[in-house]
Image (cartoon, rainbow, N blue to C red; front, side):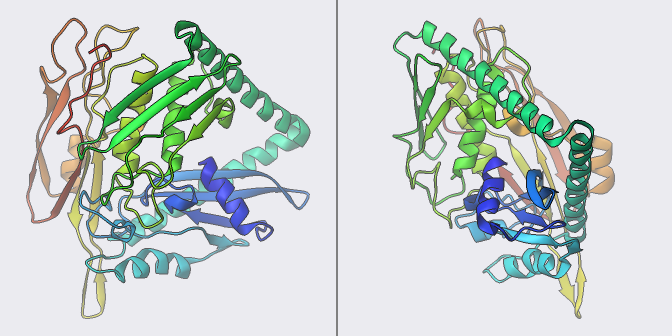
Length: 418
């Protein structure tokens, strides 16, 4: 989220007041994909900003061409729903519902075959929950500053970042010992043939260059990923490889420089579709990074995003809310140096979700879940096989739109040593 906070700080400059809250989700403004809406609140002390509190939530439907706002066939960003480069959702303590309604309902619906959010009330409630979470964060930070003093709090935050930097530098130095040249390389392919190419150059001081030169150009599809996704994948993998328990913070990237070619599908244009970049390409990036460091074989390489629902309709001037459901289906993770077999049926890497209980799923939606089980043998054979994937068998009891955003149907996950 640091990219989003920095962008808004530059965008609003001196125009942030106490009680302001900013909403942003555009990939060019530090966002990932449009359903991930970031809410940012400045924290003031003696009339100046001393911190920012931010929360990011994936919203079930923000409009676009399909329920769930995760279309597998999007080609342009507008097809994926509502977007904002940055707007004040709260202006000096006043919630701006008219502006939010315009953004979520009216703006997305102006494009061909697109609609606004299909469940406005849910999205509105979730946004207010994010604002409340930020407010709680501000209260806790303020209390901390009162108890210990601002200077002490800021110094300890700097300590945490320096500790993270030192841990990552140690990891990189240890990696260089194993690879005296300091040169590591890896690559993998998306199902459309797009290549992710990575070259890592590790210095003697524990610094590293992550160079993605050679990565394929932007595509006319939706697996483009903004630079914030690549940075997130790097910090996630580094944190996984560090042999200590670190709180996630920007200090992990202090010794790292990242080069991403402009107009590649890891740094696309402002109108490029990106909904798959955050859930498919992000996972492939992790596979490439972990394999380049020789840590783990490839995973399922995607989050297996299933969405279904029905659109909102208007009849006689009355709007009837539609609905959308979204879940990520688990899969297998590859074996690694320190474990003998890959993990079966897990939400790999940064998926960060749990699947809905069958009883709740069938109670709230017109579906029947017939099977949810491991797909035995799908992880491969050998001395150190990968993890098995899953079978999820759903019967739909009404006509509805169903989308599946997934990968690894063309190129199978590569092993670590062949």
